[in-house]
Length: 243
Image 1: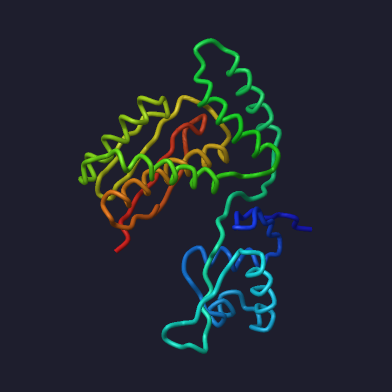
Image 2: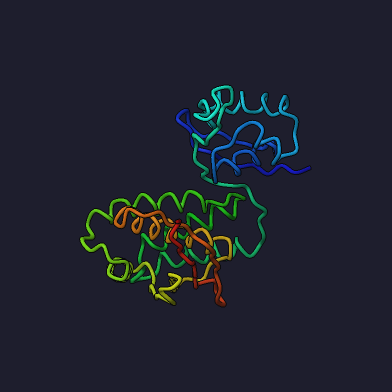
């Protein structure tokens, strides 16, 4: 039996979603607002069945709806919550890396905050919870604050200031692989599991996209991303402007 679930943050607190139909609806609404007909076409479920799900999800604060401006008889559903984490399978490798990370904290010269953050991420995923979505949101929040302290509006200068920020705070070495398309590589000195590396990469992705969006007043998205290296210590992601 599939017992996987997603955790969403709502105005009422955390809500666990395990029903596969509701998980699919929430995933689709993360990309765009949808009508009941749209959702039915995507899921292959009857509108009467979906109405029951959507009523419950609305009551839980997961989704909300409004009248369609083009047709007042039709409702448009949108996401009113935020994905925070997903359940996942664990393996023995993660336990070893977790305890090794804790050992690193006791060493002299250790960057306590940086190492502790990794211990929290690996520890959560060792317990069966992937926190990438939460890390991406944390990156966005930090990016919102950072953007207020960057005066230049040129993309090249913005990236240069972010490179300096990462270096000052020992967050990794930021390299611009190409500017067209904008491709960023963040090299870290820590070896972690692939899943934990993806979560940390999502932090950087959220930060870079938010800074660029707030300063340039243009929309950006992550077109692709990957982690690689013997210790999963390289993160590469492509940022594209949304036209």
